[in-house]
Length: 255
Image (cartoon, rainbow, N blue to C red; front, side, top):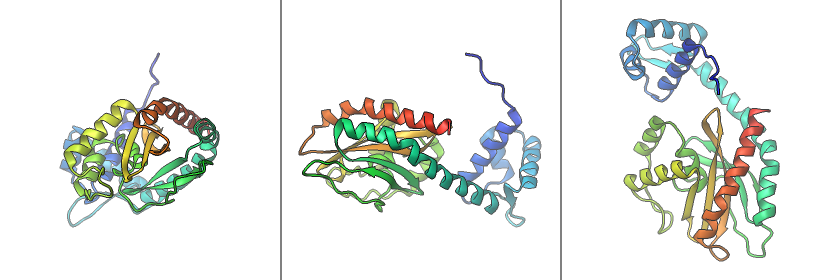
């Protein structure tokens, strides 16, 4: 397939914004140049342009560059708009999974280092699984959060893990960096996250990332109570969840 033509200068500008955004404490010219392997003379021109646009600011005292409050506010509004688009796009795919499995189906959305559930369909089984709409739990403990975390850029994953607290919620909760990195690698390879009961001891979950422009923005989740399902049941359901997540992605791109 013939590749689409691009404007390298625009791509470089976006990469600069991403680089600065990954460093909340700011970056000096030399650091940005090194990170993107671009001569300082050229980088100066890009940064001057980004400052002119209002997307980047420079502290005159420490001479570091930061994403401007204006740009942060702009993208926050864009994120809120995406939430509103996600719901309608996820309606039918979530209903399809619910009809097939009759278990809890959830739509997770990243909120800083947490996941919030912006949409859910409850199982009609006699014995169901309760869940919190906004659990105060880090991304790596839930399948919903792990599906998003695993597909973030490496720098964002490293920054998250550096600040992560590995407190156990159940006996199965991942409790060290090495294990988490291995699990995230497996998640990327398989295309879905599996939680054997790290959030709730008797509830497994499978979650699939929902990508927008190759960036994970949400996750499609199904819960599997151990009283009705085996681990094999949950893993075998993953292809159907992946299929419905792809439908959501396609709808988002065409909205």
